[in-house]
Amino acid sequence: MSAFVVAKAHIDFLVEAGLRLGTHHRLTWYAPPGATTTPGRPLPTSGPVSEWDRRFRELRSDNADEVGRMLWQENHRSVSYRYSEAQVCREYVFVQRLPRPLDPVAVLKAAKCYEYQSEECADWRDTEAHEFIESLRSAAIAALPGYEMAAWEVHDPEGVPA
Image 1 (cartoon, rainbow, N blue to C red):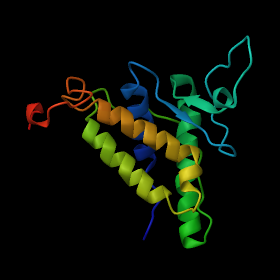
Image 2 (image 1 turned 180 degrees about the vertical axis):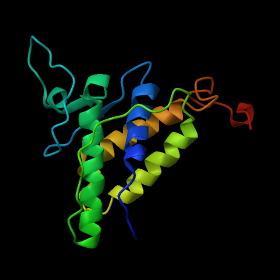
Image 3 (image 1 turned 180 degrees about the horizontal axis):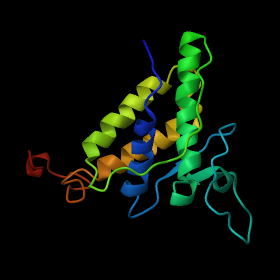
């Protein structure tokens, strides 16, 4: 298996997709213990705060730089591990690039590319980047044409459109 550091534009695309696909609800994911310190959502001001609330993250325009940086660093860590050499991780600042609508299939393919390049470390599935990609993938699937109108539960497979 090989791996490479994805282009900064690729990271920008993933972050922008997360911002834009999260129009009904912000894109959210869980940051496992020990994950990077991407800002989470504001904590409740009253009552007990659960570990879930402490580890819950959401993508917002005001933390796009931090989320992109987290993705960028995880990709560099993976490539460094794969080739046993330190990859220089340049500074990351999110740049919004696309005024046109996003194609959910393009988002799914970009997420898969990122995942393939970033999964070299044995703990990949325990990283915040993995959780972000899973959340982005779910949002892209939900944005596919016809998804919203499809039946939630199937009672008669013959009635499902081909």
